[in-house]
Length: 219
Image (cartoon, rainbow, N blue to C red; front, side, top):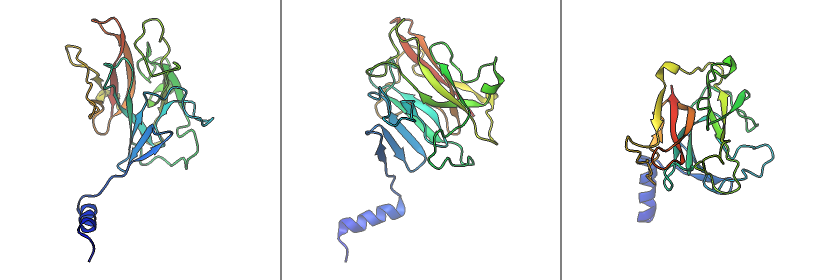
């Protein structure tokens, strides 16, 4: 007869299931079997050593950014970015990069949305990557010094579209500017089925420092 701890393990697998995480890219990517990837961005300055991966933070094939987190410094920088698998009908890239063929770059210092009304080609686009030009950490707070905060927007796959009437803003703080700094929960996160289509960096009225202020979520 099998040992008790083996039987208990088999019962656990049989009744409840186990989600296994895998670390990639020097411990910065944590993928879950449920179709979500958590990226720890704190020390991802410089990005990947792979020559074709120019973005320090970038979602995998079929994924979109759905949440952000800073559990240390009140969103004066980013600690975590969450991507979720959102496009099951997208033909897989089979590991070939880029995962989305039609993309453009915005600057969330003053360009808060993927969609630019002056350019129809930016319609139906969402966030897939974020970049920071600093040599150390991932800071956004310094007034006058961090004016370039690029993020990557890509077009939804064929057959999908974004319902802009459904969009809403998910802030990084409450009405008293108490920031959501939970270390165990990503509070600034889009609802199920929604993806991030915009991100903003604004001056805190109390500290006069830049903070990430909200993400825009659309269905």
